[in-house]
Image 1 (cartoon, rainbow, N blue to C red):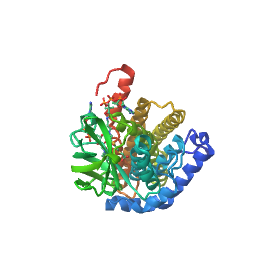
Image 2 (cartoon, rainbow, N blue to C red):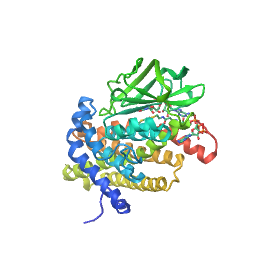
Image 3 (cartoon, rainbow, N blue to C red):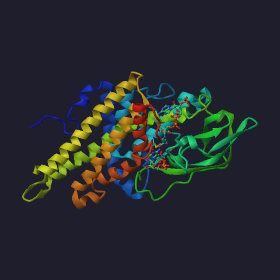
Image 4 (spheres, rainbow, N blue to C red):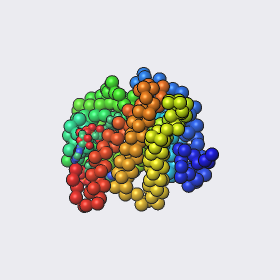
Length: 387
Ligand code: TGC
Ligand code: FAD
């Protein structure tokens, strides 16, 4: 019998530090004990399991790579492993943590005033406050430079108008980091949930990421005080730098989805007897399982190398684009193939592949579509922006 771990054929686990391995184990335990038993019901009920937020916070998973303000100060590889284990449970939970950590706490930590940091970061690390990130607009998310949402100065305040679309956590957020055009460049506004003129209705009937809240945001003459504007950035670089952080986590997360699909398939194809032998003993099924393992292994090595580069301060956004493209595509292909190998059972939520497959249709679209990431790599190779 082989002693290799079928979900980690190249033993990437042995390349982790003791602390990284400990983080992975504690998140894996949380997912096994608290996420997997309820996630199917969340899918069916189109419900974000908000009751898990205190435990997620207690494990130190919110803003885990930030220093100070109640955050854990873990390295990039540990953050990646957190995303991988959460997404082994469900992409919706990883989305919640990505948005809170990389898209809301990160810009406040990086571009916020000391007062904004003191006010929001400890509350967000402890899960008492939830945040969302509003960049995408209805007229086209791939081209955020064309945003219409705008703000004008009015005395010491700003008046904000416009709308955002497809916003994770929108309806449950206490604060929205909203990117808007101004005469002074693109700025980040901390819009609080009770500000008059601000609404965040939930988007219903999603067939993907059903265990996550997705909303529209509307701003009708919302008065935002200067104290709620992020002082540290006034260009598209602000939101795009946040995306680099979140996309980095997404390079890891889908590895967990693919592992969950392969694990289920290995068991199913042993037990399923067709033509007088277990399905796993047929050549074509073995080729397909081997191909899944090959793709997962390559994605694991890519993610780990990316994490080490990030920890060395040498990460380039084009490398993140290549890894997001490769690893999400890998997981989506694995989940679709796993669904097929389950036959009719594959369309049932009793088995995990169809849930992961549907979730990954969002993951391949958000944080930059696959085509956008291909074009970022193309720009890196040729020097020409072909968006
Ligand atoms: P471009 O002219 O290239 O750049 C404008 C400024 O930004 C800088 N920059 C970056 N900085 C950090 N990280 C990056 N990845 C960056 N990319 C660009 C750049 O250096 C420049 O800085 P400066 O100081 O010179 O002004 O911008 P462009 O308008 O040509 O855009 C290029 C393009 C297409 C790559 C960009 O627009 C893009 O990435 N589009 C996709 C948009 C996207 O990914 N949206 C995601 C929304 S958030 C989301 O989906 C959350 S889902 C979360 C969940 O639930 O998990
Ligand atoms: P479009 O930009 O209209 O793209 C449509 C198609 O055209 C795509 O296939 C795209 O690849 C292609 N395309 C676009 N430009 C080019 C080009 N130059 N060349 C070739 N093909 C091109 N956004 C946020 O700001 N915050 C969030 O929290 C957030 N959460 C999300 C959660 C979910 C579940 C989903 C589905 C989306 C979320 N988004 C969020 C929005 C997401 O980032 C956008 O959907 C994504 O960036 C694509 O934008 P779009 O949907 O407007 O598609």
